[in-house]
Image (tube, rainbow, N blue to C red; front, side, top):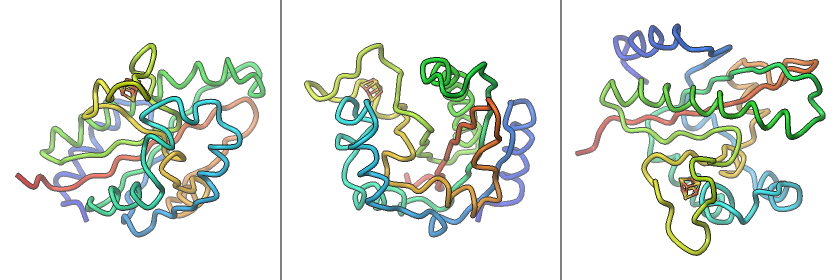
Length: 185
Ligand code: SF4
């Protein structure tokens, strides 16, 4: 597990951010499923359009292998209120704020000398148009893949973490996941 002082520094940093709930988990507490990947393929318009999504992100086994290289996981949520949660355009527009928070939390971990793999609730939107599949990712060190795109079962992640999966009404609940490890160099 992460050392007490490092955890304290990170948690103090979180107090300045609009994080609703968070929890520290073991990597082994993350559940992967091929079924999640099937839903990506069948239902998500981002499938096959980004290095941050399947199939560009790798197979579920490869994604799991990447996660297994880390020492622990930190899961958190942010929320946003919309006028109609069924309005996909309005709902997706709120992800920018979550992405910013995800980047700032990643920076907190990195500031403590930890290596990170950050995953977020939606596909990477750093570039106006993703380089996939004609060229390599322009920012491989800072791009943020989608949690579900890795095959991670988010409702089970929420359950393990004791975090609300759905905050009800017209509240959009965004999940973020920071995997961390001590520097290997
Ligand atoms: S950083 Fe750019 S090229 Fe890389 S995954 Fe994100 S949008 Fe695509």
